[in-house]
Image 1 (cartoon, rainbow, N blue to C red):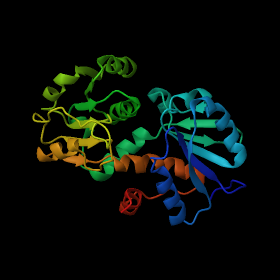
Image 2 (cartoon, helix red, strand yellow; image 1 turned 90 degrees about the horizontal axis):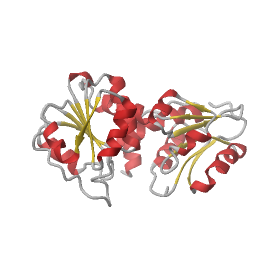
Image 3 (cartoon, rainbow, N blue to C red; image 1 turned 45 degrees about the horizontal axis):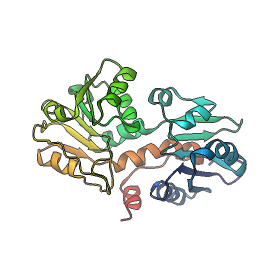
Length: 279
């Protein structure tokens, strides 16, 4: 149990925020473990971010999840920034400490790796190159996690090449930038393939690059989880690949924050998945 003097409050901030499934997950965990506390979605405008971060602790908030467009901005407002959040250049988890300081962390890479370890326990990141589609904020967390896991080479591709080049500058020589239209020809020997773009998400364009040259032994994962089985994953499975959907990353990245705020490490299991998906 937490030793916080009041019923602890936490939440997720962003704009828009109504689509977030984090409140379903965290409030389910609170009920599952019989813990006091509430988790609240809050639509916060950019102009109000600083005032909100300094006001919420006074109201009993012990921390926040952070989503777009605030993941980078909160780093400038935090008093303590973990090394991984600094490397990624964004934070998704804030802890309001008892001494009044704001602690910023990024658990996206942890969530990504934990999801793969749970659903593809035989995956060997060191066994060959990785191909990563996309160069946005999510890609930064994935690149850091893959490098830390020992992936020998990462072939990074993005629809606008300069964004990928910028990530190569930040993350170093293990990154090779590949033109978007040439990326399908880089899949033949890949051990790991990751879509970090929003392509294939409900309401977004489909992922339209061919996977005809995809290595059938590759592990393929998509960060998109609406729909759970994207066309990207369907095409990879048709090639014989082991595939992992993106929902587990959402669940696993949430666990460290929940533990810090409410004092209980939650289980990421089928029951949690079903609750978040509304099954």
